[in-house]
Image 1 (cartoon, rainbow, N blue to C red):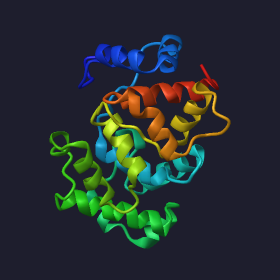
Image 2: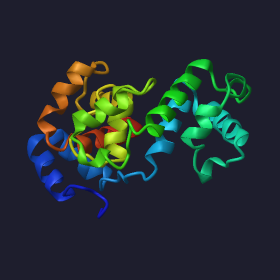
Image 3: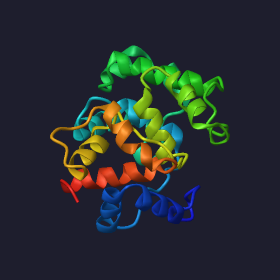
Amino acid sequence: MSELAFSIEQAYAHLRGADPLLAAVIDRAGPFGLQPRTNPYASLIRTILFQQLAGPAARAIQKRWYGFYGIDPDEGPPSPQQIIATSDEDFRASGVSRQKAGYLRDLALHVADGELDFAELPQLDDAEVQARLTAVKGLGEWSAHMFLMFHLGRPDVLPVGDLGVRNGMRFVYSLPETPTPAQAKQIGAPWTPFRSVGSWYMWRAAEAGGI
């Protein structure tokens, strides 16, 4: 876990002491496995393309759209300049909706003009990173939370807008229904300052239908 920007042992110690039910999930699910991702620009493009689409359909559109630029999805995304120069017709022919084309252009413009500087983000606090990301059309709080967790490795993110996290809470805490975002915030409050770790274990609980 050398990639992590915090001590997972300290996180375990805090979470076990703060929440016995979460401690049981940690014991059963095994080691924390969140590995930071390395290409933030490509990830944000994928976030926009995959919004409100099932995985197979989104991947088909991604492959067709990347193919317009002569790029394989595994090789990296089109440059901001390429996206800015893409016509509405070419977006549409690739299966990208007009709304998502607007989002992709806005992301490209923010990157091209330096308003969204990925090299600068690691030096900013969580709130400022979220503000920079959500200034881009199509990127909301959930997108910012995923970026903070998976790209910057921030330890204290609780993505209450994520249904998987909230479903995990429903199983772990034997709730009659999935908690609201406000309720999820209360449940996760004792995990501070390691709410990212607690959230990761809620995903594991949701996948297993309760651990």
